[in-house]
Image (cartoon, rainbow over all chains, first blue to last red; front, side):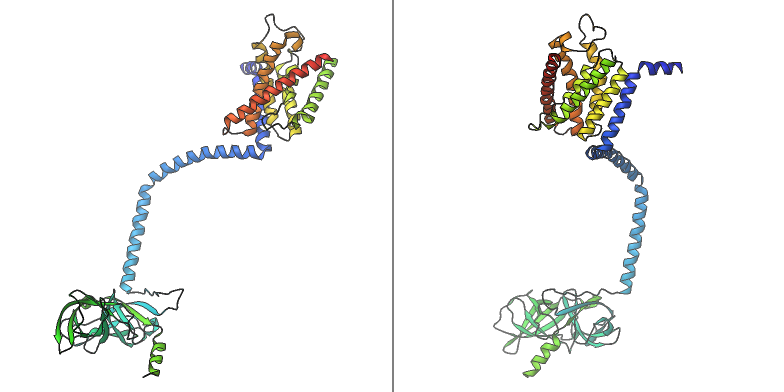
Length: 273
Length: 168
């Protein structure tokens, strides 16, 4: 106690000085907004730095937990993907254009029944009129022609495959624009015949064959296949063997294409026939 | 004693009025803000007890802050000046010590002594004050220039006032 008193007596000036300076600093920081914010800023930048260090260290120690959580999330997502795949569901997408009226509507569907071995092949899709499928819609697989819808129930639809003797399609050579009629000859599942190409036309093996858009079923420019060989048929025309782009034995996911302006076009054409 | 108190009270009032009415209105390029009220701390008797000196400094600074609207700024600077004053007096004490009961006056100890004494205290006071006012170390040298310029003018004015005081 006595030591304490001695200490106080010895340093009384310093103590009074510190007290008074403390009071004035308190006034300085409390009374002036500017000084107050400066102090708060300084203190905060200091504590922020420490906080950052702490949180860095902590996140390092939490890596195991984070890993586990991520692995769990991964597994859940994979399950979801699988689930969606098994449902063959339901990617409805439309290629809509904000500037122009949408002409084609695209709907994805899955092939649930298919054949390539008969002369008149059909395949079945898992979507029908309820999902917006209608008769005479085009069916493509990837970016190759697959067939055309010929019948719809509420939830299923039947499409005539390109591998059908009744299937006729207007097609052209991409390189020069000459068009002819494409159909299947009933032999091999991966070749079709393009006929009615005049003999003065020059083209090569490997040239692309695509749709013309004249039929109001298929949009213009969808690829059908490539030229793999040709022979003269009759006096004036070539008979071209086309290697089909679509592999009908692996047909699974297809896209149906509905032409929203088809009725308009057909009505107009009917007026002049 | 009573005489002395009333004399210092008068000096105090006059210096505060001079500072508030005249020197606070000097706006010369923002670099020159003389603060002559510190002269009151300089003029207090040599033998004044340190605690009383500190309290008087605190009061002086507080009054200045009230007039300047800057709570705490003048107070901390002036308290520091009051705290440093005894050390300054000890460092520059004349060869035969201070006369008992004497004021630290220019006419007792000479111009050179008074100049050193004033410069020390004023410089410490102004450094504290200006850096507290800016309250950051950006523009460090700009603030330092302000400190030097203002100190120069404060010291000049204080010496002039000392002449006037004696001339009366």
